[in-house]
Image (tube, rainbow over all chains, first blue to last red; front, side):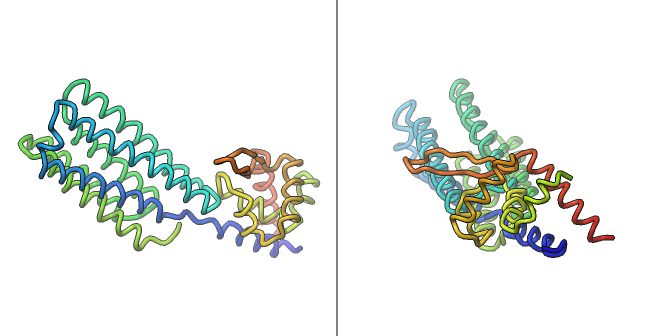
Amino acid sequence: MTKEEKLIIINEAIKQTKTNLKPLGYNLIFWSIVVISMSLFHYFFPKIVQYSYYSSTIYWVSIPLIGMVYTTYYNIKTGIKIGYETQLDRVIKIIWGVFGFAWIFTVAISILHNINPVQDILFLLGLVLLMNGLIIKFRNITIGGVGLLIFTIYTYYNPGLNLLLVNVIGISFGMLVPGLSLYLHKKDE
Amino acid sequence: MNKEIEKLLFNPIRLKTISFLMTVETCTFKALLDVTTSSKGNLSIQLKKLNDAGLIKIEKYFQKSYPTTDYSITKKGKTSFEDFFKQLQSLKNE
C-alpha cells in the first residue's frame, strides 16, 4: 500500500462520519408542539387546568416529564440505528441534558416560591437554541434563539402580558419554525 | 514512530477502523462493518489486534437483554494515529 493509498483510505473513512441533524430537528418540533398545545389548552380551558390548587402545577410538570421520557427513548433508539456518536452529537446531547436539569431546577424553585417560570425557561431556551445554532452552523436556529432572547427580555419589561400566549408566540417563532427548517432542509454535517 | 504500530496500520481494514474511530466518540460493530466493507469474521480479527495493541477500547454490555458492543479509540490510539498521519503527510510533501 502506497502513501497516497493510505491517505485515500483515511480520507474516505473520515468522510463517512456525518452528524445526523434530523433527530435534533425532530426534537425541536416535538417539544414545540407539546408546549404550544399545552399553552393553548390552558389558555382556552383554564377551568379544567386550574380546577384545584395544584392541578396546574401537575399539568405543567407531568406532561413535560412524559415528553422527556419519550424523547430520551427516541434519541437512544435513533442513536442505535445510526450506529455511532460523533463529538458534535455528544456536545448537543450534553447541552440539552443540562437544559433538562436546569428546567427541573427552575420549575422546582418556581413551585417553592410560587412564581411563574415561563420567562426564565424561555430565556434559558433562547440561550440553548443560540448555542445549538452556532455549534451546528445553522442560521435559522441561531436567529430563533436570538429572537427568543429578545422577546423574553421584552416580556420582562411588559409584565401585563399573558404568559401562555407569550409561550405560544415565543416557541412558535423561536423553536418550531427553525426546527421545521432544520428537519426539512439541513444536510448532515 | 513505533514500528509495530506502523505495521499494524498497514492493513487497510485496521487503518479504516482507526481513521473512523478518530472522528467519533463511540460506534457499533455494524457501523464499522459499513465503513470497512469487510466480513464480520475478518473485522473481528482486526479489531482484536487493535485492542490487543491498546489502540482501541471494546466495551461490552447488555441493552434491553441484548448483548451490545461499543468501540472507541484510546489515548494511545489517537497519539499513534496522529504520528502516523504526520509521517504520511511529511513523506507526501517531500
